[in-house]
Amino acid sequence: MKKHRIYTMSFASVYPHYVTKAEKKDRTKAEVDEIIRWLTGYTREALEVILENKTDFETFFNEAPELNPSRKLIKGVVCGIRVEDIEEPIMQEIRYLDKMIDELSRGKAMEKIQRTPD
Image 1 (spheres, rainbow, N blue to C red):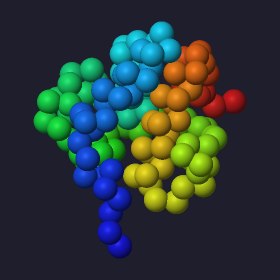
Image 2 (cartoon, helix red, strand yellow; image 1 turned 60 degrees about the horizontal axis):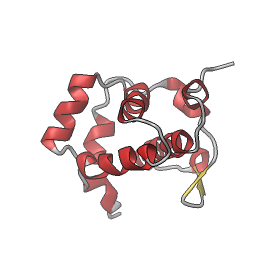
Image 3 (cartoon, one colour; image 1 turned 180 degrees about the vertical axis):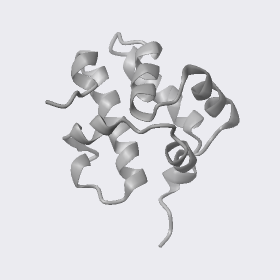
Image 4 (cartoon, rainbow, N blue to C red; image 1 turned 60 degrees about the vertical axis):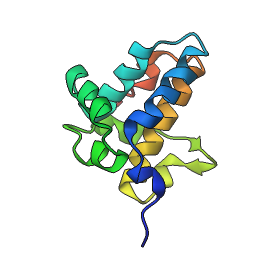
């Protein structure tokens, strides 16, 4: 089965769009970075290296230091598809990130975006 093309796209090519989407709604690049670090476990420095090296999405998620277990609490629709129903693991991780950035740009509080188990 052929991989979706987003898997081979560099994370650095999409990252500015995440930041722009947030900044248009008076949120910050720092908040975008916080979400990414919360989701993946990357440090600030490691994230900078990923952006500099133009690491692809598949590698970005496959090599994430520690995917946050609370990410499984993310529910909702992105691009017309329920994130909790996506079966392909890398695509689900990408959509978790998309959903969190959407919530940030809609003004949701960071505490709500970063789910905590009940």
